[in-house]
Image (cartoon, rainbow, N blue to C red; front, side, top):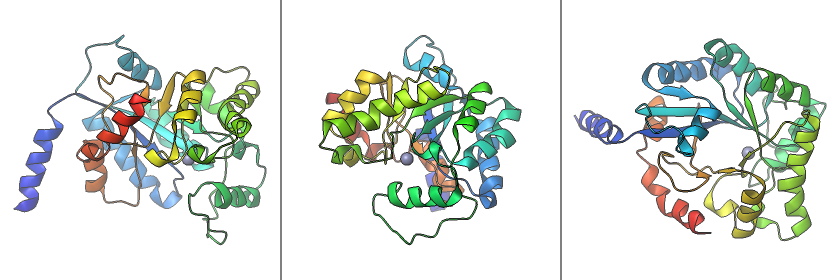
Length: 273
Ligand SMILES: [Zn+2]
């Protein structure tokens, strides 16, 4: 009974206004491919999956009439599995996604180096002994070129995945935000990057100084704070991190906006900076 009431309340709340959302994936292990596909299939049926370009048209008010529920797919960090699921599931459906790249990560040439890099840089709380799946590895520059060729969009996600709010040194901050972008652009045949997702994505991982440097060098700043991007008055973009290990009902609650209220104040604070 309780579940029935909640479900109806949720669908009522969720249908109140148009949705413009972004979902974010990290590494996707082969045991979760089916779940990834099921989620894409659900979105393809119930939502309108949009491209990065369509997303920006709506954000920039170049397109005013939109479908009820719109979602863009994004991937963080540049894991090899992201290219695999894109070729396997997204390309056949002509779905275009947005990939945020850690520029030092895509320079690595072996799985051991990739695992060492992940252990050292990808988690807030370091764990030298963290056991990583043997499938886990990085994309390289050639992989990224192929994504671009297939119509996908590339964005920056720092040089080494460091937490920007903890960097005091100006030169380091420049390396992580600007030099990292320059490296990618130069190695991707002068591809123009205008999107940047800051690492870890929570409120504590960014500060005024880094936010300003990002908005000076990129057109859009992507967070990990959940929310609806429809009719926002800034270039600070809300995103929903998706963990495929989570129950489908939980994932559905996120993308229908039921937890957005928890992030509202933090987003308003960032917009004031
Ligand atoms: Zn990341």
